Image 1 (spheres, rainbow, N blue to C red):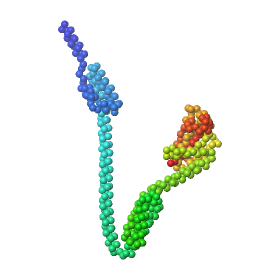
Image 2 (image 1 turned 90 degrees about the horizontal axis):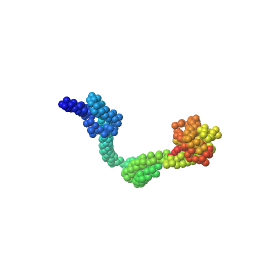
Image 3 (image 1 turned 120 degrees about the horizontal axis):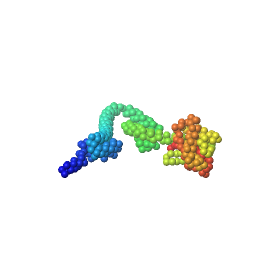
Image 4 (image 1 turned 90 degrees about the vertical axis):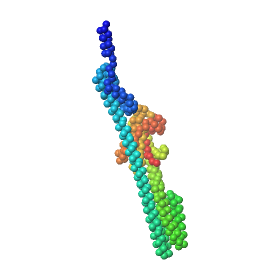
Length: 370
């Protein structure tokens, strides 16, 4: 009886679970940490490998293979710590980038402050120079005769008149009317004072007139140049439309899409059904369009190919694209650069005539402008 009890105790002892190895315990504690969920989301591969190693460690421990359990727990720990280290490095890099950005902002603010300080110092210096110049002028005027003062005033009025003429060259009366009007009023005042032989008033008014005329010219110049450019561009656009309308066999269409104008030159019945080779009778029209593109090289060009519904639906896109490409190739042989063209096939879209009409087997050359 005693022997039976002893054997039973030994059997139960053999079935008891072994304590988890420290390596496995450490891995499980690591899996309970704050960064575990973040690592699973951001480092999928490493965390999947860590998860697999953890399961291997559990299985080995349950099978009482302690060395294998330690081995897999160690691998799982390495994988997870590596994932967490990568996340920490990324966060550190991001913080460094933010600090660098903040540093650049501070440096820019400092540079701005230094610039403003330099401007302020320059203004102070200029005021001091002006004060000194005024005193010197006052002393000089006291020594000048009335005739000399009047001659100096006449020179200033002439300078103001020249400044007004310079303002006229950029149509300042149109593009900077308020400043220009003030300049003209001060010049008129200077002339009145000059006729009255009031040299002091004439000089002061002429100085103001010259300054305002220069300011008006400066304001008007970019507006005047932009208007001239726009007017020149409009003249070019009109010339383009005139030249396009003169091409025989082409009925030009003009469409507005948003702020962009589309000058469309359609060439109808350009291909046989299912063909992408232009008919010989139509190549002269393509050549005429090519000469137009040469004459107006600044305009972007779209070439759209089309088919009639007589072409099988499965072939329409490919054939229409090949047609557009063939027309582009024709222009290239004339010396036009291929990069100027945007080429597209639109299949049986935008039918011009009845569905199966060969008139729809066409290409449209589209020039774009504002």
